[in-house]
Image (cartoon, rainbow, N blue to C red; front, side):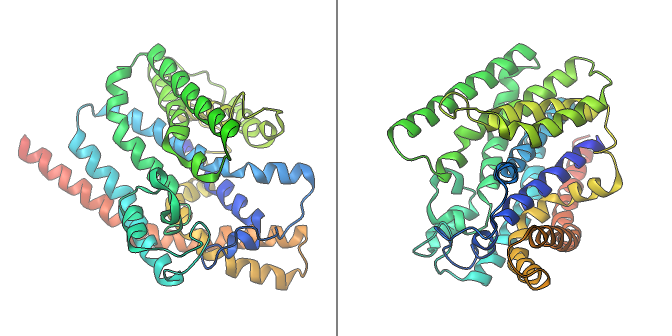
Length: 363
């Protein structure tokens, strides 16, 4: 399913665009507390709306992850030990190394999400993938690491979800609608009684329906023949990224990222079987292949990239923003190719060899 790597490529470019669009508040967030810092770029309203929803790239990652893992669970049912080993080998080493790297870079001093600095307890919470549940300064240990914490929560829940759904489309849809309702009621309660903040959004309860959209898409893909409409997948992807941000949705009625998740889940189902050219090419495929490494390292590139962009194009202009994005994406990709080869692949291959030996011994 090469187009799914293409979707991961789109997802990481969206995430980079979201943080590039913030300018210095994002670029300096790994070094000091930038909360309340004025935005660097003053964008046209329509462009600001699109950049403001580019963080949906994280939801696209969630949907693709849920889709692929559900397909794999169908192919290898009951292999819980192998599943657990593959998952921790896939996400753990890179995440832990990123935590060490950012801690060495920034120390334990104040930064975004940690105005009073980071404590050893925060480091432990982050290392154990608990930041999405407990919030606080643990968010600052690995920039963007909350999504890895949410991903781990989904990994733990997936075997149970598979048993509940049992390959039935109606059960998958019902569970998705149920989690959407729970997430919406929780969000309504917070919006009406308190102040909605980033920690609330990152809670796994709020992100659960995003994963369930990917699970449901996979179950449908396994049970039904997907229409041979790769152009429709491209059109729906454009709709999700460029048009849905302008939908006048009231968060009290429907959280805006839920329609996005449902739409890209359809894109994943169609693209997996009938890949569109946009997603099935060498460039976007390679970006998708190293996208996890890009996600972990791109924050470290932002300050250098923006400094160079401002020297090339003085003043916060559209050219500055374009140069900042281009350099950040290119440099992050180059670094990620190395970290993918020397950090991600070795534990993945080790886990594969261990599971093969176990299978041979069992036979």
